[in-house]
Length: 129
View (tube, rainbow, N blue to C red):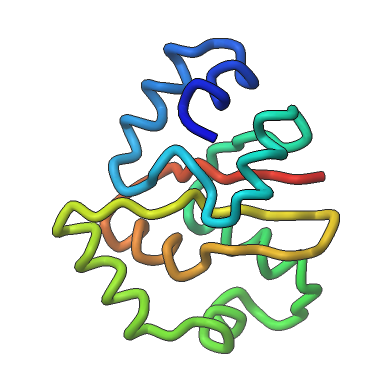
């Protein structure tokens, strides 16, 4: 689904377009086509959150009981974060990150950390509930 479908779902088309343009490292689509379809059908939505908020929600989704620092250490490949960060610096755009509370899946922890390193304060996150 393209920007048109996201605009239709969100209602305020110019607001969504502005927000996506203000987050220069993300495309206006998900990595997996099913999530684009859910967005277009209104069965998912975009929520903006900080990279830290996103990582905390990933931790909570997995019922990880140790600290957020320990969680990140256990699931993150720092080389991958650095690779994504460098790609962002070079102008590459990445698919939207997501949290799926139905299947308890997440996708985007490395991209979130790379975006944080890139000084992005708010990330567009696909939410499925």
